[in-house]
Length: 336
Ligand code: GDP
Ligand code: ZN
Image 1 (cartoon, rainbow, N blue to C red):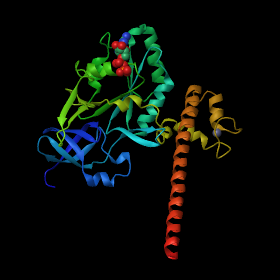
Image 2 (cartoon, rainbow, N blue to C red):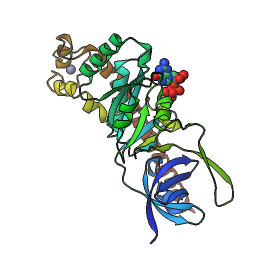
Image 3 (spheres, helix red, strand yellow):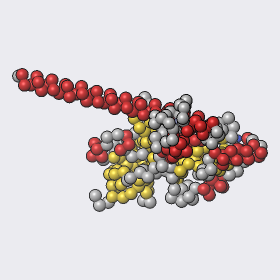
Image 4 (cartoon, rainbow, N blue to C red):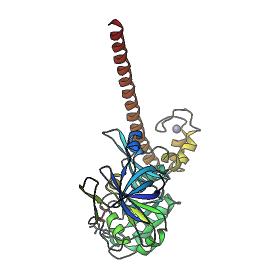
């Protein structure tokens, strides 16, 4: 249709979406055809998506198409065996830890894998620096630089208003950011500071659907004065338990490189003789913590792949069952 426009999905609520462009905000639904074509959850719009819309009266719209996603954050729902798209087209994922009990280098690495797996650049925010003396902070910053030389680090304190200007400056126009990290590390506090005190949890948008039913959507994407955008939705808070896939190759390329020289092709790098990875760990060439974290992440990723395979087998069995059922129906038909 002629009046097709581009808009960005800023929130999602039970099959309805809030989309936004220069003309304003629209309550949008996916067309029947698009829904029919969708074979998985990944085919539906997600927060952060650029979509093609047809404008309707009363600030409503129809989503005709999802434009190709540059990056994606997914979460695999273990029980349901399906993939959930949390958000798309994110440029930088801030991985937040506080200096207290939560501080853990391996956890940073876990989140980096998730970010890199989706094509997203990670950056570190070390928050609550008011809780430790300056000397301790310097040690931690040194540690971070040594272990993650390519990752930017911003140290912040909400209480003392430190590092927040640096964070604001870090956020670029027309780029999209998200915050990953355990609960309690200060993600909401940081986002609220960026938004200039505007409260995330209290801001709702109300609209009427075409049937006159009242729909309330929680905003999940925020636009900063600087022109940058931040995505913060409920799913984002659960990210951290997803599988890893390709990202692991990026992050642990050192290990992968070495593993080519292992004596056995199927070496698990845990006990085998002639294992180059183990040798590198022994000699200190590979950091021991990094190695252990690699094993943990690998184990988890293998587990997810295994359930995938099982699912495929189940599907195949069901297919066989259907074929058999169809065949016996046909046989039955022939006899009559
Ligand atoms: P979230 O779960 O990651 O969103 O964390 P919140 O933003 O809800 O913060 C959890 C708690 O940490 C709250 O009580 C905040 O007031 C507190 N907090 C956040 N940032 C800081 C900080 O820089 N220093 C200190 N001391 N406390 C903070
Ligand atoms: Zn090996």
